Amino acid sequence: MLTNDRIIAQNTINALANEVEGHLLRILSPYQGLKVRKISGHGGYVTKLQAEFDRYCKDHAYNAQDQPYWLNTYASYTSLVAKLRCLPSVLNVELHLGRFDDKTGCLTGLGEGSKRRIDYTLEEVQQANTTASQLEAQARHLRSSVAVFTRS
Image 1: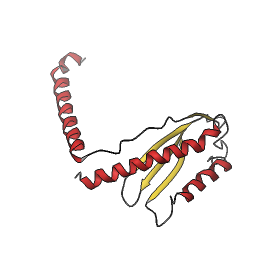
Image 2: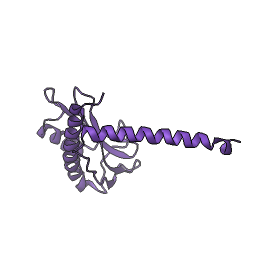
Image 3: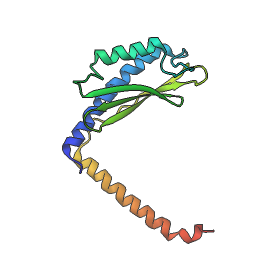
Image 4: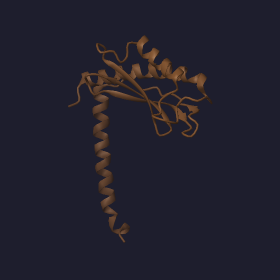
């Protein structure tokens, strides 16, 4: 069940994600065109960049046992991604940081950053869910009404 506490928690992690994304993009900015990922062995970030990520997490108290926020930076195919999680809840936000060439490990582009909304209300989210359900029902009805024309 959707609660106001859940909405507040999402707004809070969205605000933090907006801030973290800006910081991580600034960390990555000097690396444009340079090698950021190891392409042999087990992969991972180059030592200098990994040290910067580690320092950032330590300076902001992420990934500490007594702190609620965990920040993980990783690669997915040719994308650089960070995931900000709030424990013990299941809230998390993925941040797209950029792209790299999987053959050279060089950063080919920075993410543009996205400003996540931090002002959702319970009523707004409930209304959006209701509207989406109604539209999905309308779409199912429309598809079934013309299905005879699409069958082979």
